Amino acid sequence: MARKHYHWTLGGALPKLGRHSEVKHAVLRNYLVDYFLTLVARPEQDQFRITIVDGFCGGGLYVNEDGGEAVGSPLVILEAMKEAKVKVMTTFNRQKDIHFDVQLICVDANKSALLHLRHVLEARGYGDNLRNGSIELVEGEFASLAPALIGRAKKRSPKSGRALFVLDQYGYDQVPMAALQAIFSTMKRPEVILTFYVDSLINYLSPENLKAFERKTGVTGAVTAADIDKATRGPGWRRSIQSALYEQITRKSGASFFTPFFVRPQKGHGDYWLLHLSHHWKARDVMAQTHWTHFNHFVHYAGPGLDMFSTGYATRIDDDGQPQAAFEFDDLASQSSRIALLEQIPRRIAETPEGIPVRKFFVEQANTTPATESMIEQTLLELVHDQQIEVIGDNGSVRRVRKALKDGHVLRYRRQFSLRLLDKMKP
Image (cartoon, rainbow, N blue to C red):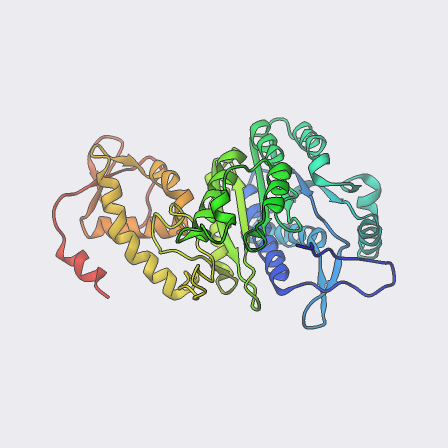
């Protein structure tokens, strides 16, 4: 498959940005604002430090499908920081200013893209940032530069180990697993936002393409010879490939938490994975909230509840060429999630007769559910009210909890049958 690259020339026409890429940029902006708010919630905090690596930064500006100007990821990141700082001061009613000590490293293999980006940044008032090094432009392939970039991020934040890698690659084979492993094995609080054009890989499968993909990424064994040969493919072959690919990427990356969703283009049949990888459950929860916020752009092809991601994936067009029902992250999906959680959570808690702490329960479910922490907490409170589960305090006694759960509260299954809950679960 010929990979689509963008081209920039100073004074020339801007490249066209697809709707799905605008969606990815909107998600990035929304996530970063919420992420920064989470990082600086303490009123006594006067600064925080982070390194952001934009591994495929592009030339800074595009024209969207409506003919309007669309900013690229470097400006999305910079504008998100400005928005977050304003919100930090107003949301928390801060009297003391806070310093965002952020270094943005923009990487691209296209020299003309970086020249255009520099021109755009200068024109937008970021010239001083370019000169003082808080914004740096680096020419080269991310795969080859990754070790040095990771080393710089670690050296800059040796204690917190905080860094964000935005890896909006062109396709599916430009981010090797070795780079992800290095990120998550050497830093304490790294995060990666990775796009992966999974439908393109599957649609253009051939022995040659597969060999090149495995060599460049280090993801091996997810696709078999039977998957490539149309005569020997078994039923559900697309689902099998996607499930195996997802399992390998998340396991080999070394990330503790991961959130996978499809970005859904309005036209065509090419879905992208948007994978968020991190070492902290809170980062995962912020990203999950972002998906619900942008519900009209995300989709997943599985059922709601606690096991949504554990059975793999199915593409929007199934093996027989038929459209599949999708989990749309809308009001209907929210309601179906609530019903599924009301049914599944008591059974899951019953698997630990002695009880399980609230935080431990959420962390154990995080990687296999679209539900946010808030959604799970509200369901738990409903189950407590309906006497399906009970809450045990520090002294071992049953607590009457109505509005909020604490991390140290222990959840325990009550074996009494509740007709009231059964009635609630009826459609």
